[in-house]
Length: 233
Image (cartoon, rainbow, N blue to C red; front, side, top):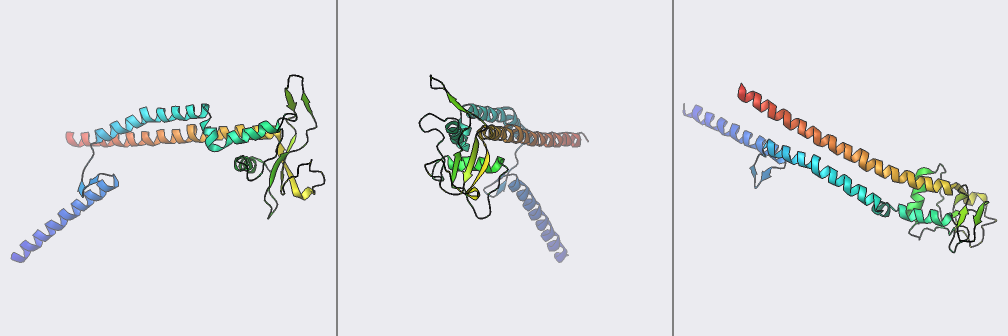
């Protein structure tokens, strides 16, 4: 009898320890383990937090992104403002500093070469790395007396695998450069990149977050309904 009593007591202790362990694991996964003690967050509180996130925080985040986008902050973070400076230089043929090339040590280099690599169909030859981004001589360009100038958007933009000299580049072997697009293409790629960032954040990220929060609310509502049915039974 004594052996059975001890055996029953040990079994009961093991069951209690197992129950406490399972409760702690569930609470820890939910982030509710404090000082080694499991705490449960009321479903109503979690529901209110999720509703606050979906109804208040998400719109605020979306508005903040739109304001940052409108104010040019997103362009500065992504480097597109620097690429726009390059495109603006290439648009000019007469003003001081017009059509200046871009070199690897320039701050415009990385965002511009990244844009070209993303949208141009031209691939670099094996073992060769670009050293210069330049605009070729414009076949059509005009300037009026007021200082306004126009350069044909069809003017080619080239990448050279050597440093472009200060002259027109005549005599550079064909294998040392490649036309990657035109001035018009460069402007188009800038706009496509802006649209891509807008799509990734406002369309993909915001929609995914709204769907995730909606799913959590659906789970909580289902759990509450289940508890109500059990109480009624």
